[in-house]
Figure 1 (cartoon, helix red, strand yellow):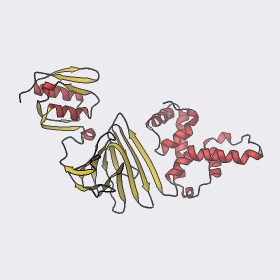
Figure 2 (figure 1 turned 90 degrees about the vertical axis):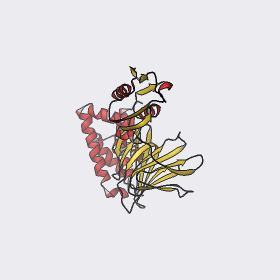
Figure 3 (figure 1 turned 135 degrees about the vertical axis):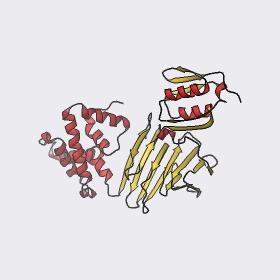
Figure 4 (figure 1 turned 45 degrees about the horizontal axis):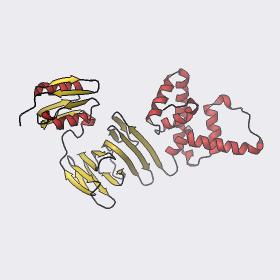
Length: 332
C-alpha cells in the first residue's frame, strides 16, 4: 500500500498512539530516516503527543482551541493565513478542528486518555512471529497470522484482549484487576499465569495450554474448566464442549524454537517443524513410519534437515522453498 506524505500528521499520530498498521509503521520509520528534517519533525510531534497524553486537561477537550494550538505547534510558519469570510469562518474552523481531532496527533492522545477511561491498543503479526508488551506491562508473543486487540476499562479495572490466531501470554497479575481473553465468546481468564492460546478462526477448536499458574476457560453459557500448570484445555466449537488433555510436545516451539522428539514418527516431527519454519521439509509416504529421538534448540532448518537425514540414512535435496528427504524407508 502507498502512503501519502500529505497525511503524515495523521500517520505519525497513529504511530505514536500504537494504532498504526504494519505497513504504516514501516512507512513512518522509513520516512523519519530519510532526512534530518523529517527526523526533527517526527521528534517534535512525539514531544507534543507525550505532553498531550500527560495533561489532565484532556478531560475537557475544546476542539476549537485544540486546532489552533496544534496548528501553531506543528506549523509555526503558518500562523498568519488568509481566513474565509466572517460569515463562514466559524464553520470553517470547526470543520478544521474536527479534522484534527479525528486525524491529528491530538486525537490519538485524546483517545488514549479519554474521559471514559478506556484505552485501546492493537498488534498484528502476518508473515513473522512477534514479541510485544501490552499496555499493562504483560508480555505477549504472537505466532504468524495473528491479530490481537487490547482494551482497558479504567473504571472497572478490566483488561480485555480479543484474539484471532495464536499467542503466548505472560500476565502481570494484580489481585484487583480482571484480565480476560475473548475468542468470539469463548473466554480465558487469568489467575496469575503464563499460558498459550491457539484460536485460529478456520480451526474448529480453541486450545489453551497453561505453563504456570491457573486460568478459567469458559463461555457465557458454560462455566467451563480450570486449568493449572502443564494442563491443556480444548473447546470444540461444534459440540460446544470443553475437554482436558495432556499438552503435546513442542506446543510452544513457535516461540522458543526448541523441539524435542522422543521416538516420534517422522511425519509428526516434520509437521511440527513446518508449522514454525518458512522453508518446508517434504517426505514421501514410505518414510512416515521412521521414528526420531532427537532435540533441536533454535537451529537453522537446513541444519535440522541434515541431522534428520544423517540419523535415518536419508538423502537431502534443497530448493529455494523446500527440503526433500528421500530414502528406502524404515521397518515397522
